Each structure stands twice: as C-alpha cells, then as structure tokens.
Image (cartoon, rainbow, N blue to C red; front, side, top):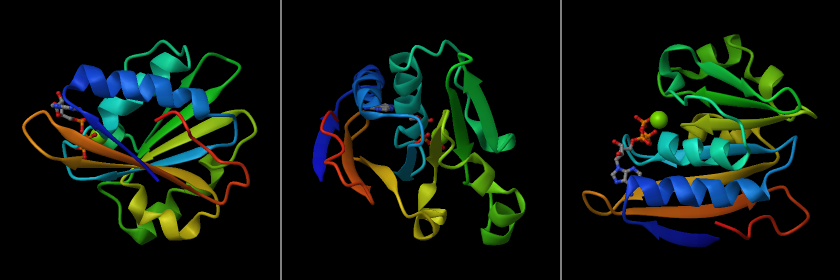
Length: 148
Ligand SMILES: Nc1ncnc2c1ncn2[C@@H]1O[C@H](COP(=O)(O)OP(=O)(O)OP(=O)(O)O)[C@@H](O)[C@H]1O
Ligand SMILES: [Mg+2]
C-alpha cells in the first residue's frame, strides 16, 4: 500500500494524472472515502492523463458517464445513491473489465466484495485542504502502481 498527501485540489488532479500512467484497458479502479474527499477531483486528473478531453461532472444522477477518445472508453460510475439491489439492476457488470475500457467507480466499497481484480484509492480529509490518499490493489500478478 502506498500513502500520499495532497494540499490542494490542483495537487490532487496532478496525482490523478500521474496515477493514470498505471492504467491499462480492462482495469477497474474503485474510489472510497468520505463525501468531498476528492474522488471526482482525482478522476479529473486521470482523464487529463489519459488525454481524454471532457468536462468531468459527478455522475450522481446519471449513474454512469462514458468518456471516450474512440480508442478507449472510460466509464465513470457513482454508486453513492444506490443500494445493492439497484446496483444489480443497473447491470454494472456490463461496464467492468472491457477490453477497450477503464472503469472508475466512486463509492466502490459497495461493490468491492464482488470484484476479483481492482485498484483502490481511498481518500481521507485531514484538514480544510489536506487529504490523505492511499493506493492498493487486489488480484494483480504484477506489482501495480507504483506511481501514486
Ligand atoms: N487537497 C484536495 N484534494 C481534492 N479536493 C480538495 C482538496 N482540498 C480541497 N478540496 C475540495 O474538496 C472538494 C472535493 O470534491 P470532490 O467532488 O472531488 O469529492 P468527492 O470525493 O468526489 O465527493 P462525493 O463523495 O460527494 O462524490 C472540492 O470542492 C475541492 O475543491
Ligand atoms: Mg464525487
């Protein structure tokens, strides 16, 4: 597990951008931690790092947003408002482990137990702008991240 600290939203975007270098099609990343921790902010950085130009909005009301540059799809999912049954009904498995897609799931703790392989990023608020960000992974053979 790797632990990093951020002192501003801009720094969190930069961490997300750097983290995107770890990602390959087929990866699923789950984001955990408190409201306002910085999950969506970090995801903005990932999309910048992947060179997918878009406006990243929280998908709370749409459940899933699909960002693409035609070669790669990035599915951005937010499970905050969903209970287990609703997650199942929405068919989340259709958005996981695609060979041309990367899946980013906010409030991933709600589905973590169903996933065999994922990267995990956990946010804690340490101060008004100070965040702790912890990186870990499950189910990978190789040593994933290394760039937090
Ligand atoms: N170091 C920091 N990193 C990220 N965001 C920060 C930081 N310091 C302050 N902020 C602010 O905290 C908020 C983080 O919001 P963001 O939407 O990224 O959180 P979230 O974890 O996605 O929340 P939610 O659980 O509601 O989806 C933003 O308003 C951002 O400007
Ligand atoms: Mg969010």
